[in-house]
Image 1 (cartoon, rainbow, N blue to C red):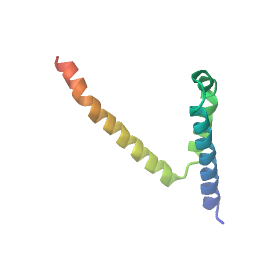
Image 2: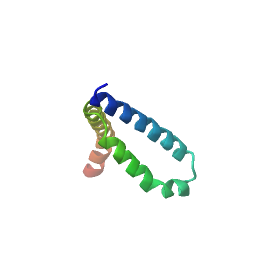
Image 3: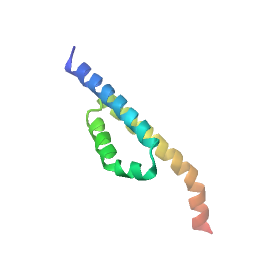
Image 4: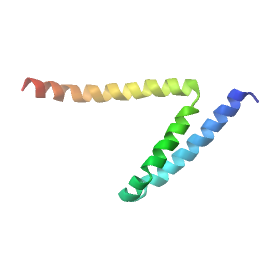
Amino acid sequence: MSVTDYNARLYEKMKAEQDKYRGWLLHQEPSEILNHTYEYTMREDIVMCIQPKETERQNRIERRQRDLEVEIRVLPTALMALSG
């Protein structure tokens, strides 16, 4: 098994663990969620650091698509506010 394969397996395992943690966190009280914010953010950063390049590239594309969708929805309202 190559280093790339091990890295991909590690990423998948860490991502699954983080997804499970996120699911648990979303069922907690707001105050408890706030208590875990730093831990959640650090875990996300670690997972992102080991993310395979192809996945990273795809995530950037998907994130940009979501940003554009939001901009398209907000633009008419922003233009009306500026013109009125």
